[in-house]
Image (tube, rainbow over all chains, first blue to last red; front, top):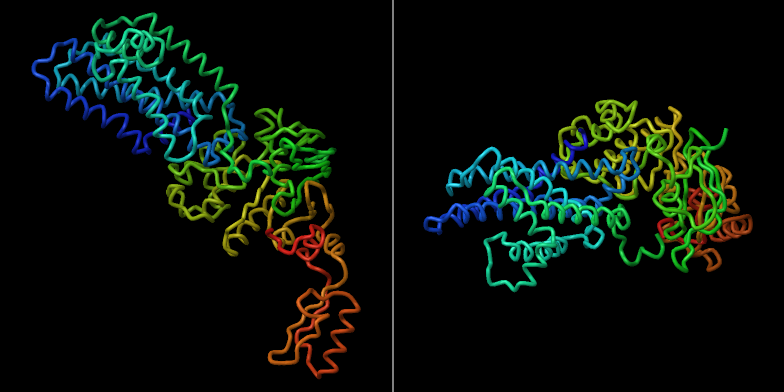
Amino acid sequence: MSQLKYHLTLIMRNPRAFIAGLIMPALFLALETSHKQHPSAAQIDQVVAGLVVFGLLNLAYLTYATGIVVAREDGVLRRWYASPLPRWQYFAARVVAAALLADAAALILLLVGASMAGLHLTVAGTGSLLLAVTIGAIALAAVGTAVTPLLPPGQGMYSLLAITYLPLLIFSGGFGQNSDLPHWLTTLMTYLPIQPIVSGASTALRHPGFLPGRDLLVLAAWAVAALVLSVRYFRWDPTRPAHARRAP
Amino acid sequence: MSAPIEVNGLVKRFGSFTAVNGVSFEVAGGQVTALLGPNGAGKTTTIEILEGFQSPTAGTVRVLGANPRKGGSAWRARIGLVLQTTSLDAQLTVAEAVGLYGTLYKRPLGTGEVLDAIEMTDDASTRIGALSGGQKRRVDLGIAIVGRPDMLFLDEPTTGLDPEVRRRMWQIIEGLTDAGTTVLLTTHYMDEAQHLASRVVVLADGQVAADATPAELRAMGGPPVIRFRPPAGGPELPPALKDRTLSGTDDLISLVAWARDHRVDLTGLEVSPPSLEDAYLALTGRTDVSA
């Protein structure tokens, strides 16, 4: 529990996470609904689901992965590595913290959607969406862990991560369905981790109590693959400057 | 009973570069052993192997009876570390950080007790990101001792700190060894090694250049060193005595003869055994301690 509290504290005290995970999706939702005349229920579901996933990506992927890189470069990971804490517990607490905050952000966005955009909210639909967000958070955090060895220290990592998820979110319908995309691209998206979360979230709102099994399988496959890569390649040590690599 | 640290024939290579080349030493319990050496001598590599961060290429190391790479959670609970650079979460307060690490141990010191020891009680609620370098270093030490470690690794714990803070850190370290903690210290400060260490291991070019008590090490530094203040505006020293460290009987005779011939008072003349720094420089072949 102390680890969970620790990771929740770190995220809550990170203004970037708060703005990117909660404020920006809510702002986009307000903007999106303000210029649409009488949107259909399906359109509202799609917009809310897409923005829930946008917030989820910011919390469980961008903030999560950059948080690990910052901790690595500051020597904090090294200290945890040498502590009696079982190493899996560090990651478990970090993932659970990201998932809890992503759930909280999703819940707030649903309430904003219901009050501002006329989103029809049910208990079953909310539960299904939160389940989709939780599963998505676990898969994204696993992928986020796996990519950290590739991330350079400093501001460059934010741009690098943004490049990896923003186009995928757009092509996956996170900012509205795009019917002009080539078939091969839409098919490809269904095998990458973001489209299944968008699909799961919008299905949860459209058909409360139901989550598409194929999407869950794709996410599970990504989580397992990322876990295997993390076990093999994860780095606890800070990046050494080039001149120090030869003679540490 | 075996020593807390046993290093035998330790070799570490990075590609074609050999950082540590056949190092052997032991560290006795309940005292401070200083590991000295210029940059690139292999001391950080050696200490990282002892801490379990790296594997040796050859040789064996045992810390508290275990191979550090295979030491489990129970072994790690007996080890405290102050890494070479500060390693703290800037968003946590001092009390939160110390309390958090305390939850990992069976018999931790109380947070208040640790804050008292590192003299940070008044800053308990301050976020670590807002602390000065010296305060952060003290928090590092606080986290290292919160689990009552049997073995404490201090990798340049006082580098960059002002003399007052260094003295406070020394007092804390002395308190720990009085309570039975074994300390392995690396430092560039010879006065620190002189003050704290019961034994000094000097590394040079990846090998042990000396392994002795500070007094023995000083004796290895060669003949007595001659120090004096040349008179202002007086006659110049002869070339044979200028711009070098004077030591030994011949230099002393030449100096006294020169002073007698020129009717110069040798104000502050001292003939003393070489300092630890003199001995260290003689052993490592350097002209500057930090080089």
